[in-house]
Structure formats: structure tokens, C-alpha cells
Image 1 (cartoon, rainbow over the protein chains, first blue to last red):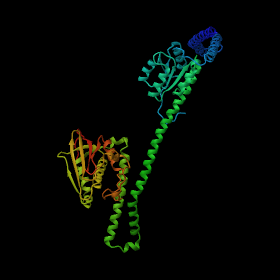
Image 2 (image 1 turned 90 degrees about the horizontal axis):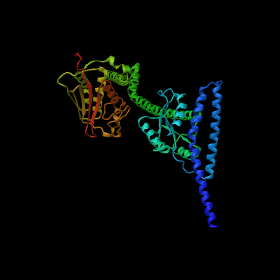
Image 3 (image 1 turned 30 degrees about the vertical axis):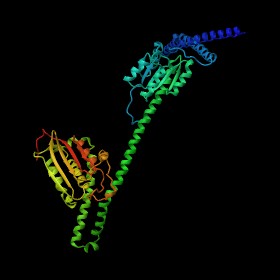
Image 4 (image 1 turned 120 degrees about the horizontal axis):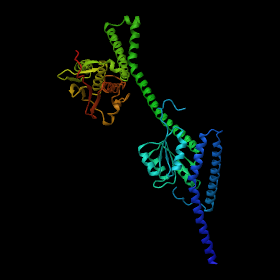
Length: 91
Length: 393
């Protein structure tokens, strides 16, 4: 009986730390996302709407937004799952 | 939209702080086209370094940075640069922390990944707020000045109408008599002569008030330079002292004059210098009880001529020595309250000393006072000598 509880506890801890690691990674992802989406916006602002490139740029932007939404969803879920938030490291 | 009374303002200065070059670059590129002045810092301590040398309107910063982080930076800004605003960048994970920074004084936050349009909008909103605050402060200051002016105006009107009352009532009263043929024909020669004297004195008093006000407004005239003429100070002071001898006699005081051995020549507006010296002599007589002594002296001191008016009067308390040069300030002492111009401690317009000092200052000099309560006062007028100008009699 005792060992079952011990095992569950250990598994729980493992899950928690995996979640924490994944959360830290997703937080890190904000920086390159800022880069991709940000530069896309900046380029888009400089293109005429009838420029063939603007369509491609819009595509990249859309994908970046998808990533962004994923990251955000993950982070919100992580907050709920870990019942609060432990400090992500610098960056 | 900006109030016209405010001085023009340069472009907004923004400090961008983030340890990731990509983020800094996107921020900078987004804001470049808006005409702001942009400076970048890699971390909190670099940011603080910049803040020591410049003031920024907005500090746009990440929260998590090595060395000095966003929160510490925020605290430092709020402490040392109260008119600068902070906008923080935060990931969704650290939103709670971002909200905490708002409580600590951050103006706004943007969610990462930050997008150019969002950056621009947040900065623009923040700037509008900053400009409004600036305008508010400037308007407050202007309002205070206006209230001060209003107070001065009210005081001036009150005092002036009070001062004018006596000579005007004399004029009216005696003119009524003189213009009434019936009464006039019954007056004795002595009574007639007396009436005329009173009328003349009243007009002279009105003239004096007008002169003093004129002198006061004149000293604020930038065209002063063109009206200067050579003036010999010993002669001028002698004439002033002579003019006050009747008053001195009536008050049973003594007035002594010691002039410098050599002529003291200055470039000045004669009437104004005369008015300034008259004012000091008048005050000395006023604030010295009957039987006291007034000493007037002129001498050369370096590049200046110094006119000293010393009395054995009530003196001026140290705490009041600054105030006596303020317009409309009158030394109040109810024990000696009287509206008479000549009597001991008689009231007055309060225009005299400030005018006199303005005049001295406009001529490149100053008026100083050495005094203490119950120990008399000495007023010293410093005026630059016209060393290289030819002497004129």
C-alpha cells in the first residue's frame, strides 16, 4: 500500500517537472516568435498590397500566429496544471 | 491641441530594454517610423547607465533580464525620474507579475510575442498621457502665477485708493470752498493762502504717486539703454537731502550729509536715481522716531559709487529683510498706525523699496541693507561708475 502511494508520488513529481520544463521552453519560444511575426509585420507594412510577395508574407504571419496561439494555450494550461506559477528563468 | 502657452517640445525619447537582440530590433524598427528618439539597452544595468545621463519619456522594458531585472528598473525609474513612464513586456506566463508592476507604477504592459502595431499603439497612448500630465503641471504653475498677480493687483488697488483718498478729498474740499463765491469772499487772506497751499500740496502728492508708479513701470523697459545720461552723484544726493530738510525739521530730526571728496559720475536716468535715493531718505525719516538722526554718505568703492542712508530708527528684523523689497509689502506695526506720510511709521504705497531696487538693478547695481531690530538701518545703493565717460557738469 505504502509503495503504491510512493510510486504515485514519484510519478506526479516527474510529470510536474516535465510540465515545468515544457513551460519554460514555451516561454522561451516567445522570443523567436516575436522575431518572426514582428519582421513579417514590418515587411508587410512596406509592401504594396498587390505585390505578389505580400501574399507569402501573410502566410508566414498566419503560421506564426498559429504558433503563438499554441504557445499561449500551452502556457494557460500550464498555469492551471501546476496550480500557480513557478518563475521561468531569465529570458 | 497643446496649449499655446507651453514651450515647444522635442521628439519623444524612448529607451528600449531587452536582453534579446531580435526583440530590441523589432521594437526599434516598429517605432523608428514614428519620429521618436530611440536608445537601446541590453539589460537593466545598462538601462540605468543611460538613465543617469538622459531623461526618457518612456522606458519600454522586458521584465526578465539578467543583472538588474525589469522590476528593479521600474523601481529605480519611479524613484529618480517621476515624469518618465514604464511599459513592460511580458509573456502570458508572467502576466500576474506584469499586473504587479502596474501597481508599482508601470503605465501599461504588452504581451509577448510583441507585434509592431501593438508596440506603436501602446507607446502612442502612453505619450498622450505624458503630454497631458506636462500640460497639467505647466497650467498649474501658470495658474499660481495668475493668482499671485491677482493678489498683487487687489493689494495695489486697495492701497492706491487709500493713498489717493486724502489728497483727493483735500482737493475736493478746498476747491468747493474756493469755487463758492459767497464763502470765498468771506475768507481772510490768511485762510485763502492756506487753502491754496493745501491744494498745491495735494496735487504734489498725487504727482508723487504717479511718478512712483511711472518709475516702477519704467524699470521694466528694455529700452533703458537709450535714455541714459551722465549724472554726478554727489550733486544729486545733495539736492535730495535739501528737499527733505523741511520734513526733517518738522520731525525734530537731524540729517547729515558727507559726500565723497571727488565727483562720482555715473550713466543713468537722472529721475530714477533721484527717486531711488529719495525713497531711501523718505524711509529713513519715516522709520526713525522724532529726534533721531539720518546720515547720508556717498563714496567710491572700486568700480562702484556707494550711496549710504543710515538711520537711528526701529531697524528691520532679519526675517523681514528679504520681504521689504517685495512689492506692496508694508511693515505693519499697529502701535504706530497712521496714514500720514511723514509721521513716524506712517503708511505708504509700499512701492518704494522694490522700485528703488529695480532701478538700481536696471542700472547694473543693487541695494543692500544692514539692519537689526531696534538698531537702526543702513541702506546701501551700489551703482557702477562711468569711468571712461567724459565728465559733464
